[in-house]
Image (cartoon, rainbow, N blue to C red):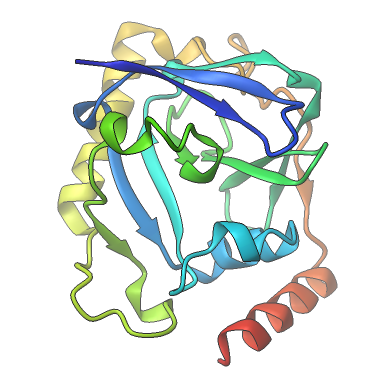
Length: 207
């Protein structure tokens, strides 16, 4: 059974859905990497998005499952470093939304679970399969399984290849279907601003 899972920013200015979601339609993880932590601190949403171990819950799936129904003009994205990852958020209320590759030609979508319907989330996505970048987590991680490695990489590649072969990689609200360019020009965080964000992360985590 699949579910059309509603997504929304905190203020409701941006709304959409993830189509036909089930545990088999993606993979649910918690990421503790410093870049994910920095992104949430940059948006000043750490108190309601990060868990007790400074983790961000995400659902990796195919970008063609995403539809934006309202507030698309609120979409913004930023690069936190010189790495290619684009991090998307709603400018109206600084709600974190997605992580993607820099081009629609490489179809990958990591949905930040905080923006999804909390009442349907668990049933639609299934349980958390594991934790990523556990060495960068804070607090007690006892009993929490580390994920990643070859198995996760193969799953990501499999979904990307299926999107490309089917042509569905063009069916996404985040990238131009012809050029593959993001629909909004990405900002790049100034190194000085990144230092400020990293300092905030360090204060919050005690590291």
